[in-house]
Length: 420
Figure 1 (cartoon, rainbow, N blue to C red):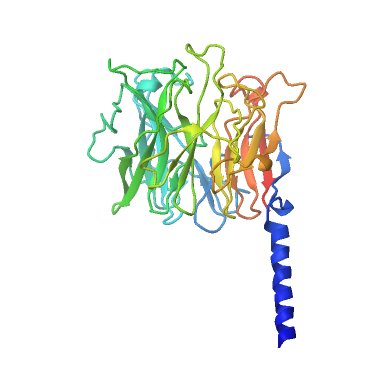
Figure 2 (cartoon, rainbow, N blue to C red; figure 1 turned 135 degrees about the vertical axis):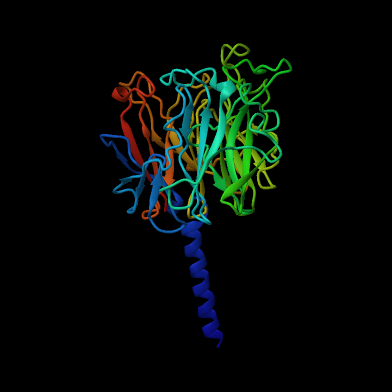
C-alpha cells in the first residue's frame, strides 16, 4: 500500500515537472514564431474577414462570403443597396463586419458624411473632422441582406446631437483604422471603440495639444433589443493630457480579460505647433475599465510588464485575443523616440501580461522591417485574425514602400505567426 502510494506521488511529481517545463516561465513551447510570409499578386480576401459562427470555418467580409476558411469566395452584393442613390459627395465607409459570436447577427458600422458636392477622390478631407457621424446596419442571414440603415444615437439623444458633446456638422465622431474592432463583452454588450473631435467654447473644433487633430476616445456601447436593433449608450470619454500627447487619444483597440477587465490601447502623438521638434516621448497609451467599458482609468503610457517604457509612432495597432486565452498586441515599436507618425516600422507582435496588462518584453517578435535598399516603409494599416484551422495568427496588409495607397509601391503581404 505504501509502495503504491509512493509510486503515485512520484508519477504526480513527474507530471508536475513536465507541465512546468512545457508551460512555466521561459518555456519554449510558449514562444511565437514567424511561420511564413506570402506575397500574393493581389490583396488577400482575408483583409476585413471574420468568422460567421462561433464554430466552423465559414467567413464573411464586405462584399463576400467563404464556406471554406477563406480558400474560395463568392460575391455578396449589397442588399438592399442603401448607398446606391446617395447625393453626389455623400460618403459611406463600411468598417469590416462584426459578427456577434453568441447570436450570429452581423453589425456593420458605417462612417458617414452627408456633404453634398464633396469630391469623392479626396482622402481624409478636413471637413470630415466636423461632419463624420456613425450609422449601423444589421444582418440576420449571414450578410445576404440587411434589415435597416440607421444613425447610431445614444438613448435620449437626437441624430443632430447623437452623443453628449457631439453635434453633427460641428464635431465628428468616427472609428480609427481597422485595429479599432468591435467586441462583445461578457455582459452581452457590443462595444464600438470610437473617437470624437472636441468642441471649444467658441463652438469650433478645439485643439489643445497643437497637433494636426485632437480627439477623445469614447466607447459606443450597444445592447440588443427585441427587433434586432441595438440600444446605444456611451462611455465617459478617455481624455489625453495635451502636455503629454499633442493629438489626444486616437484609434483605440480593445481586449476583454476573463476577469471582466477591459484593456484599451491607444495611439498618441508628439509634434505639432507646441512640440515642433518632437521632444515629447512617443508613447503608446492605455486605460482599463472594470465596469464593462463605461468608465475608464486615466490614460497612462503603456509599458513593458516591468514598467520600462518603449517608443511607438502615432499609428494604428490591434489587440487580438487568441483561442488559447492569450492576448497579443500587433503594432509598431521603435528603438528611438519617434517623430509623430514616423517611423512605422518594424511591425511587431507581442503578448500582453494578463496580470499587469502590459506588454511582455521577451515575447516581442519582429515580423517585418525596412530593408537597407528601401528608402522608406510604412508597415501600418493591417488586419489580424486567428486561423481556426491552424490556430496561427494571420496578418494581412501591404508594404507601403513609398506613397501610401500607391499600388505600384505597396505590394500586398500575408504573415503567419505560429502560436503553440
